[in-house]
Image 1 (tube, one colour):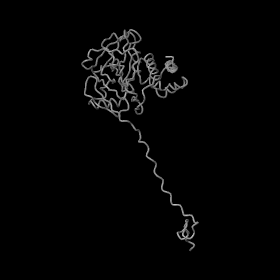
Image 2 (cartoon, one colour):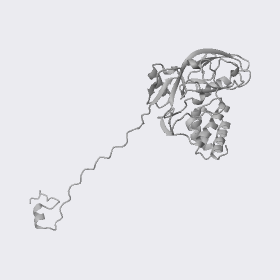
Image 3 (tube, one colour):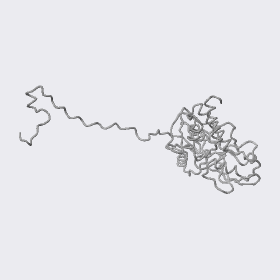
Length: 321
C-alpha cells in the first residue's frame, strides 16, 4: 500500500470472511425526521349568528367578527346600510329593552336585533336639581345613548325623551365618538337654571312599537345567554368563547355596575365584568388598583370608587351579599 493510501475504518469483506471475530461496521443513521406540524395559528370556531333589523327585515347570517365595531360592519354589509346607521343591538327581542342590550357577550344561540337611526329631535332642558335623572351607556362604536330615566326626575318630565335615544349633540356640540362617562360628565357640568339643548336620535321603530316610551327597570340587567357558553367580544384582541359567568362573577358584576351608575351616571356590564376580572384574584386594594390601571387607565377612577368596588367584590366573595 502506498503512503498516500488509507485503510477504510470498517473491516473489509475479505477480513470478515476469514475472521469471524471482526465486528461489522454500524450502518449509517437515518436522517432525523421532521418535527410534526403544530396546530394552525389562531384557530377560531366558525360561529354563525342570525340577525334582523329591529324595525323589520329579512333574517341575515353573520360571522367572523371579534369586536362590536366589526359586528356592526357585518350587520351593515348584510342589509346594505352604513355601519354608522346602527345605534345599538338587543338580543332575542326587537324591542328597545335595556335588559336585553348587547354588551360584550353574546350567547352562542342568541338572535341579534340591530336598532338603526330613526327621527332626530331637539329638546330644551333646564336643570332644576344637580342630577338630570339620566343613566348613559354607549354602543362601543362612538354612540352614547340613554339607558335609564329616573322616575320623577327632570328628564322624566320631558315626555319626548325616551330610553334608547342616542345623544348626538349638547348645545349643538357633537358628542359622537365620546364615551358614556364623558357624556355623563358633560351633562353633570351643565349649570342649574340655564337652559341647554339636547339633539337626540331615536331608534327606528316597528309599527307595534310606535308610541312606546320604555323605562329600564331598577334592577341590574343580566346577560342574555342560551346554553353554557358565550362569545366574549373585546375592544383589544380576538373574541373568545368562554363559559357563562359563575354565581360569584355574576353577583359581583351586578354590584360593580350599580356602583358605576351611582358614581359616574353610566351602566356598562362589559366594563363591570372587566373590573371584576381585574380584582377577583387580588389580595389587597393596592394590587387591585394597579391591575385596574393597567387595563382601564383612561378612566381615572376616583380612589373612593375603587375602595367601594374592592369592598363589594370582597363582600360577594365572602358571602356577605
